[in-house]
Length: 332
Image 1: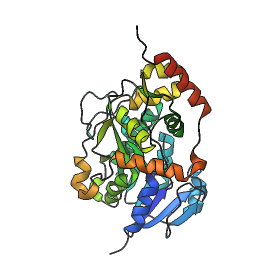
Image 2: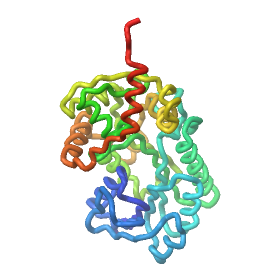
Image 3: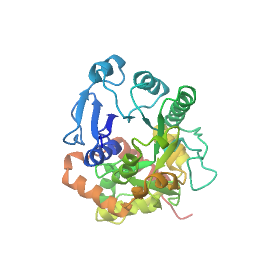
Image 4: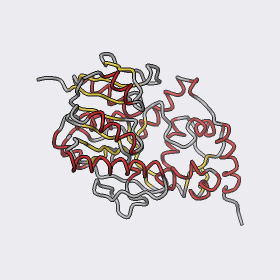
């Protein structure tokens, strides 16, 4: 049986690096198109690396020559212009084009849980999500009009050991260990789904080269939905402390930091619980295996072993001080 020949545009990010490792383990002939060879997450042995800039179509043509691929996956397409370039470059050169969209494209706030692939796409709060929706619209039209072989994949909040899934990153862990109070948006009880990148990878690699996925959309997430209070508490306990939490309304955060607020109001402030039966029907072993309690330990252990990545954001630290002071509960 001939190995699948797959091109990743990108391939060393949080999600794509785990997918690259698993693809190689499963005997896929993997090619990466990237601008440089430096990365926090190394390229697995056996991968063919093509140096080129996906934002420059001529650079891509030079890097890839006349090669065709069974599958092309673009991990770094964010606007309709990006995906139109891909359509122009890869029409007739691949049997499957996989677009990495986002679960934040789903109706926000959701009117019904759990979220399925048929949940409407609408996010009036976050430009990032609206751009992903516009990309999907373009690709669905290309599939309908000319049979461009697109498969849409919508990750939700995916992490690895090098990624702290809280706004502020290591700044929050540093505050926890100092005994400082930390900000939890909202009242801390909304449900959120965190997916380990190795769990995402099993479902994702299982979709590659599958003709029955063409014209379809899939999300790939954990089935574990936990509160933001518990997420923060699990990270605190992994760091060896008990947390001191202060709940701050998301719209109040948005008022002082619009960028942080956009990601909250357009995504994290709303409960996100997913039905993964669609991908599981095609990829039976795609069920997530890593609970966040284990993931939290991996995150803290990795950062303790890599002190150069224990970076405190002074601006975020000061902003959290202000929010804590303003919203810390006080007796009347």
